[in-house]
Length: 309
Image 1 (cartoon, rainbow, N blue to C red):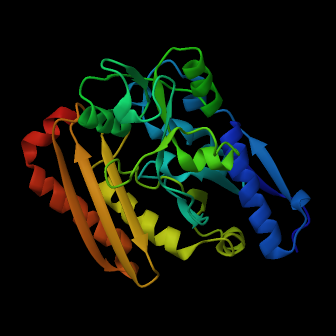
Image 2 (cartoon, rainbow, N blue to C red):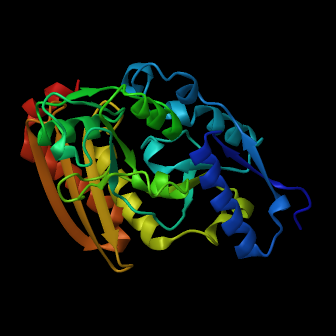
């Protein structure tokens, strides 16, 4: 019987804390345990500390997970809670994504200062975003817009917007909802026209391979449909060497038996894009994502990827 609290690792941002509290509360409810049986351990990551440069410049997604993963591997943490879209496709040896919570809304939210809709921004307006996918999709829709790199926590980005540093910005609607800020967006973007990042809206829990005690605990909160969908999307990413240096979008939907995936790759300027759709058995989710990645790579041809280097 567990006598000391389980140690949950997380970043310290308000959104990371909201995600960790949701995970803790689901675990407590599933196992009939008091919240005090879960100790939240806050760690600062390099990605949190360096906010004046793009992730591509300073090393990519792993900068949000490295410190947490070191403590997972050492046994100082029992598991860690992450935004799934922040996770590199290749994890440190000995770790895996053990559970996924039910997925939130996958759409991107536009928050405008000078116009409520992205397409209605004035000629030459400035939009801030740290995501190469969002930057490329904005340029695809509005080549005249000046898109600048714009990092920081949700509250920081909204403050910069209010101060007039940009005319608009984009955020994941899921994150805003988890922060109780559903009222903030001036427009929710259509995922058909503005497809989300792979794994957007999904919270994941990272744990040690072979730690049966912890992974049995986590299995109680794993949402199979989200797990299948995100596995498909991460398979697509991994095949295309998805990182913060590559504009890639993708979204899978699973009904538990059948899965459907739609993916897109773009050049950073948004001028050229390729799309792919694939469907099959939910049990083959990761393989289907990989197959979609291989097909779209062939469709685009080797010259397309020179802009990604």
